[in-house]
Length: 142
Image (cartoon, rainbow, N blue to C red):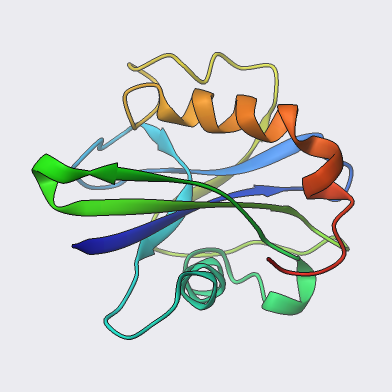
């Protein structure tokens, strides 16, 4: 089963979420979370930090990621690991794979015309809100 990850990366004040506007299919033109493929032999958290660096130029030292949830798609023979964290200090994000955008948090993340993932982004954000104290006050990587 192929693994993937997505990362809900919040700014220092937890006022914005880093999203990318997809340049290719699936979901071309829609907003999505950063993340990518878990390589063979790679553990999930290492993969999440690698993808965060590759896609947004955010180094591991800038954020503690917390493993929030997983999705398994048996019919597609894949799973997605979901991580969340807030920046410890301001960083300039950059990448050439997709356009990066710091989004306000008052958006309708369930809007399937604007956001990738059939409403899953909205669901993940709501789960982070429910567990915000644990996630954002956690000082160690889980």
